[in-house]
Length: 335
Image (cartoon, rainbow, N blue to C red):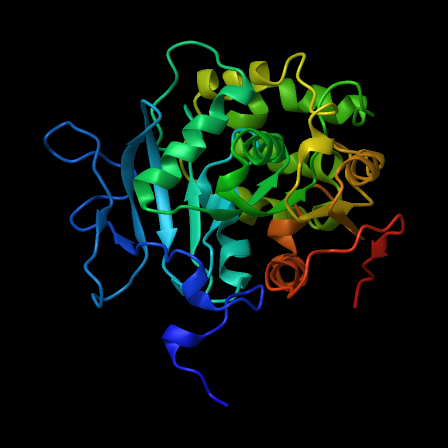
């Protein structure tokens, strides 16, 4: 039997009206990544019910910080997907992944403080202090709850949000990330490359070292790395990048992971020089309602191989039931 939009079940198979609908937003006259001419941070305006829905971008105030935000409208009966990016990466970097998702899925991206179009932090911050900021961002956009995906550095942020603000996170996806300190570090050369200012200021240099830094699909395809980095046209501020590095000093989520109660998908590449796959296995052991999928690829294959990995994320987000806790691993093989 066909169902109308108001009766369409949500991704979990529950009646849609049991979940609050996300508010559609539009940028109005805002220039993406810019403030209004008044000098105040621009707000993403809320549309009245029934108004046309279209992608929105602009700046808003959340947690006392000015953040650049982009929202791709989707089915308001589904939880939006909040994407937490990696270190030094503006929201444009995730565009291939967003494009590969179900068009009905509402997607929220943002630039972290000091990155892209977001205002720089005045003083250094710790990773855990950003969870309230993310919660306030959801408030500002009118969402009560969201699915949350964190990649690399953003995976640490997603872990904290799931533990410190559990009611805001519906499902959790952790990609190419780790529990921080006290776990297995990446390849020393790759970690040293990340510390170099040239890595985040010079796209040509970053592309030249992409194979040893990211592995996976860019290892034997330098043009792919150049194309990916060219999409991030905004210069990366050294202070914002440095503060992100400092935010994880001494940080570990090992004691927090057993407190993650949301259904969790862990995605890890078997050729990731920055985050060895053993870290994903550790997280899988510690997160009660988790499933682990290991794909053949590297640190940024969620972006460079979005057509292959986005369906894995979609299948998890739309699953009718919570993942069953298994000690085994779901391997992915190249087609």
